[in-house]
Length: 312
Image (cartoon, rainbow, N blue to C red; front, top):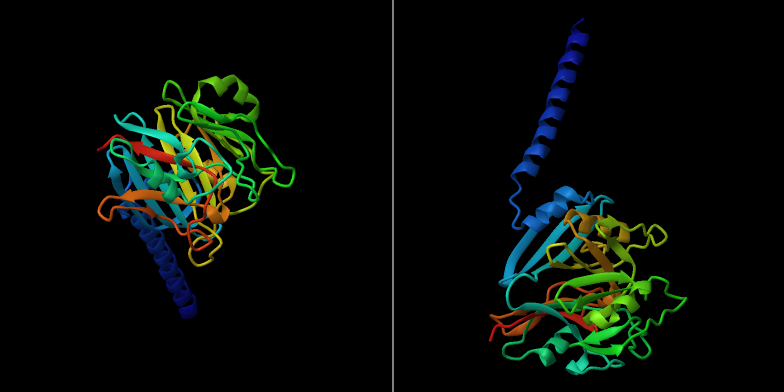
């Protein structure tokens, strides 16, 4: 009888401790002090985050917020996520295509920061950006169309069978200032109305619905762009290929991330080792790469998407 009572006592203690642990976990989730509403939405609503280690947020210029998260994903892998939230309703803010030496051409390369330096001038300040469309690595010809400052520089898609995730879509800014994402088959209907545009890869969200990309299960460093019905743009970069730092993301997870931010449409851009997210650091007077590419440094690319402010 004494043994049974002891066992009962231990069992009750164990259940009590288990309850305490569960309560502690819930309490930690309740008391985590998020620096950004965006980070909290991703953590609470995407279904891809197991545990948040850190998140930071700061304003680059009015209307542009930089959010950075370090978390454990649902696979059990550490992940570094970088988001630029751009409110196109902010007076003086716009998006434009960056090209090497700011020329209306293609077939050469620069890093995103170098493109920013050539495009930047008083009243036309480059304050953020990511690299843009996929391209042929042998000649830097982009896979999709290219529009810049209202000029159509390239008006066709050049897919390759070896890379089926490229030349599937386009992202652009219409002549009324609104963003638009579409499949290749929609391009001809929008071509004359696009003032800025590049091609893209798989669609992640379309008309507020997640796109099924289960045929592409790969997990890699990623760049993506999406927008809401309220003209909020999200640039997203996920680092990868460094196990203890960050392990990349699948298209499925990217879609869930954008869904948590109430995005209308989103697509994947050029990523992998060239993944770059850049901001202008006013204190240092430099264009600063925020993420850590798997190459270890910024890679020269074919084109970019730049955030423009009309500040002097």
